[in-house]
Image 1 (cartoon, rainbow, N blue to C red):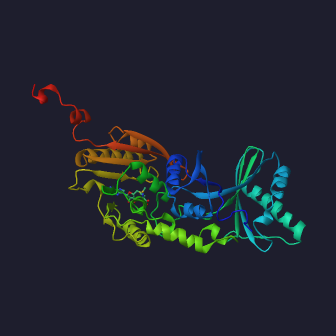
Image 2 (image 1 turned 45 degrees about the vertical axis):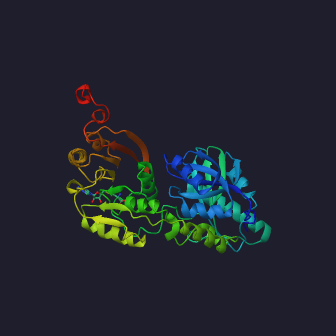
Image 3 (image 1 turned 135 degrees about the vertical axis):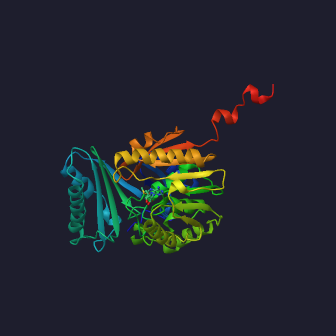
Length: 398
Ligand SMILES: C[S@@+](CC[C@H](N)C(=O)[O-])C[C@H]1O[C@@H](n2cnc3c(N)ncnc32)[C@H](O)[C@@H]1O
């Protein structure tokens, strides 16, 4: 039983994320009320109580999972690894009637691959139960009582309980996607990094399954991204407090805003938009986001300012020559029709990026899964920036 997580006491947790999103995640955590936040590579550690653990799972937009570290030790070989895992008082967390699932991430030359190490850890745990009680917990890869996460870095072994289960980007609204959907966490991060404000126009100009537009609407109206999920790993723990989770959910729902938003999700390809409409419905945003089925090159607006986020096709499905031309046309379109706007483009195509023909004012390295991307900011001033802010002597009337 998880009796060491009391309702009132604080304990340490770790939220993991993609490379480059640590600062955003820390900002989110602080805003939610986390204590002692401390960023590390691809994550942020913090403290909070059981209610905060539920809240973090429900409300964080840029977290992959929330872990509770329970033990760490040094090991150089399989035997010392087995010993270290075997020594943990697992009977505090589960009984022999329960089930477990172990995920192991190995970043060390001293050890075998992750599946082998997960197997080794499982042996160490079940042997402990067998020795003490003559019975052992079994493995359940789908709905285990306890998910254990082991990280091996050189000779340092960190053992945590995974409170999330399926990664938190699996929000529950995206049932249908096109071929190259952006990860939901990244979608939310792109919106937050763009500094778009809910009163402004936002154009997701090549929206595919609509992830960026959907994440923007959830963010702007403070809708918890986890509200559509049916399952978090903590719901299977012995100490799961349904009433507390309901309270946390109700309080998060009470903070939802109903801003009138001006978000356009546009894609050239109609079948993709049909899939997006299903996702919009799932996210209860079908009346909030406007859908447009045009080439981005044919979009026009009366508005004099706003934010455009583009996730154009990457190189894989387009010839190099076409990429060069496509990105050049994006740059030309932005210059011609969107002065006064800020445009952000996420791409892994360096070839494309070089051909936009505009100078980015910010360049951020991000990852869409394992794919390295650049997120580029273009400020589209009317005329030159200098011309806008510095009038020359002939203009000044002297
Ligand atoms: C990388 S995908 C976008 C993925 C999207 N962010 C998502 O989460 O699903 C690129 C999209 O650009 C669209 N596209 C390609 N050329 C276009 C154009 N000229 N105008 C608008 N959309 C275009 C494709 O149909 C495709 O859906």
